[in-house]
Length: 106
Image (cartoon, rainbow, N blue to C red; front, side):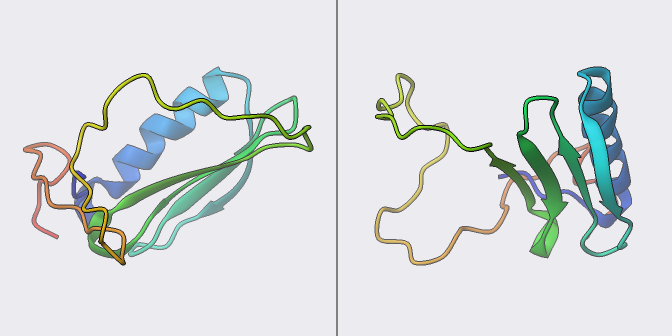
């Protein structure tokens, strides 16, 4: 996962914010924390999304669905792009450096 530096977190959230607004999503809240910023949105059909930046610049996307009927979920048709140790107990920290998104250090 790519580490997003403190200097780039606002830009990253801004890119996603603009895309969500352009897609017709309603922004419902913004957390302007320098350390752990986040944005929240809702779609016209009731989905709620959030993007937050956590420890060490790790980005977290979360989507909550409106009430739906239970259905089977098919296995992914594409392989994972990053190795995740099946015995891992914790979510791994971001460990990929991007010349742009990780710029500035932290």
